[in-house]
Length: 293
Image 1 (cartoon, helix red, strand yellow):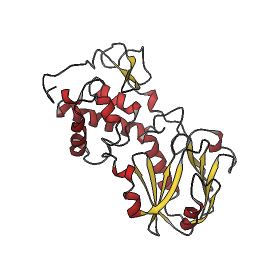
Image 2 (cartoon, rainbow, N blue to C red):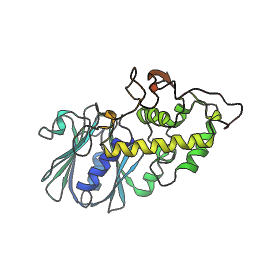
Image 3 (cartoon, rainbow, N blue to C red):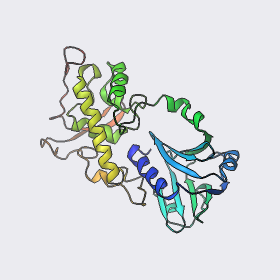
Image 4 (cartoon, rainbow, N blue to C red):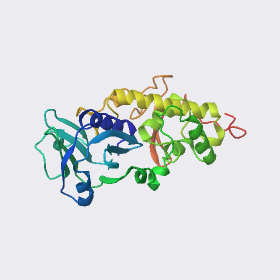
């Protein structure tokens, strides 16, 4: 599954190449991926914006509708025209002739280019809804604040403090607490904040909680600049694999020296997920009272 920076790089590519274009024709090849009825209502509409909420992409249309796109595990968005662009799971569909057997939806645009939605495993989906209805989708309403927003701290604190007895890694992976943080960025943020992933929220001060959020924001912004992190599965808006993992401090670094203290990085399991940390500078401490660490 892509993480927030990967989806953000896709959004930026769509903003550059698709916003301002009119959808002349939509061909739905796989009804599971996009309803043919929804395909018909987008024809003639101009794309006016490209947004992201957590890992969900949203293309605003000038007819009052929103085209929602979730790439899931193997989705791709590819533009072919005067410029070729592809983002998503790095299969040959990014570079070979399209449509191919993974193509689910084709949008013909008014500049002669085409936007292809490819998905090998058919887990990804598109939906077209009125803008007001899209905002009221239950899973969207449950999402926590965006870590890249101007001031996510007050809402993040309020939601995190509901889970005082939980371990902090589980809490920051909970999309209803904060949106878009996945396993890579959780490990990196906790290392940067010098917090052990198994620490209970009750044992962390507000200062430490804020340090975790600020660190997650910083590593995500760095990752976006480097084209995303998931080098095996996702590529950036220019079709290049993300480079962030080349610079990660602990993720996939087990057995190597911690770049901060020189201790050995270990891999364990926390909250059911593979977890990378430095035991020397991310020591597990139990505080005497809630929020006192």
